[in-house]
Length: 194
Image (cartoon, rainbow, N blue to C red; front, side, top):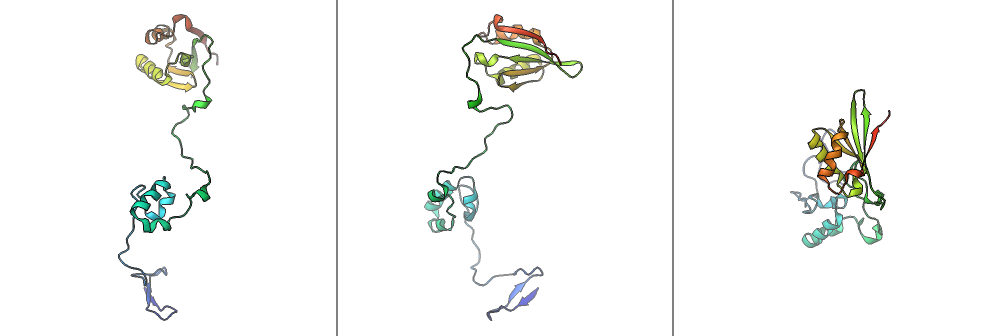
């Protein structure tokens, strides 16, 4: 460490090898106290960058009014003028927004069953049309997975894929589980070609 005399003729300031000051600094009161926001748990200086700066500002106005002026004015009406933060919504490939789903048609609904090849010797069963009967597809896929002891998933807006060839069993299982689906409404499309 080297002692460097300040240019204004004050006391010497100790600096480390990197040139940064070491020890107590003149003009700073010790111990340094840092105030934390109870809404976002960040230091008060960083509340504007937290998830809900408007809640932080309300908390500061009631609990630490002397520190409200230290916040940036990014959430004041003049600066923001109708700009809302865009928060990420949960969901993945399978979840579609409600606006993109098609409205149910009044035409007679059919449930179609089809076997599709998967690899050389394996196949999957594809079910389409259960959504027209107001059947929750996720619940139906879980039911099929437990009933046939295999994997089952919702792959499209109105499509369930069951691993394995269970097409023949579905003609009995679907009307038994959901009486709103008549046996005559279930249609066999056969095997899908590669």
